[in-house]
Figure 1 (cartoon, rainbow, N blue to C red):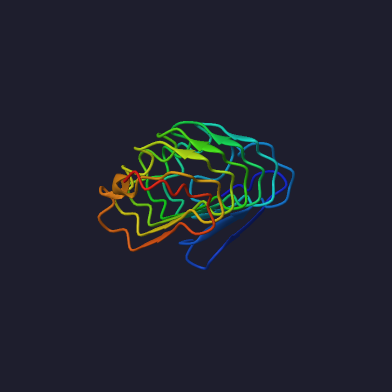
Figure 2 (tube, rainbow, N blue to C red):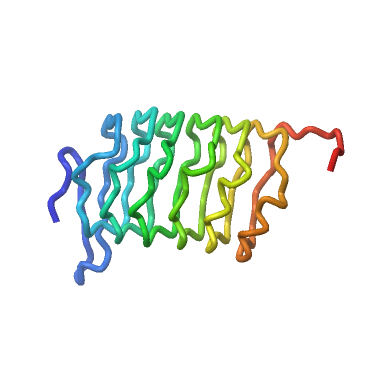
Length: 174
């Protein structure tokens, strides 16, 4: 396992857990050279305005990805394509305003998605539909006015959803 430049890498005795820590290193994009056998990746507190697609292809062993406080404003469609084992995705405390619908496509094993304290105003109706294993969805502290919760009917395993502290419209049209 080669560690990306400026990052720290650790592993357990069996190499079953391989941690790549690139937090607070001034990255403006995801490194291209994250090891293929990485299982946990920390990219917190960087300056990645846009999460580009194709940087994570082949990282099929990543189970947890932390992108908190990284000034992320947008996520390109299919950015997380290739993370077939991803179970946790942490995107809290960023600047995301809109989710177009395909950002989380192919994350069939994702259990936990944290989007707290972004600037989310709009979420496409199909954004979470492909997340068949989703159990926890955290959307607290955004600017959501309208979110038809029946869009989550495809998420049969959903056990917890956090929606507090948003700018809800109370026109009762539902």
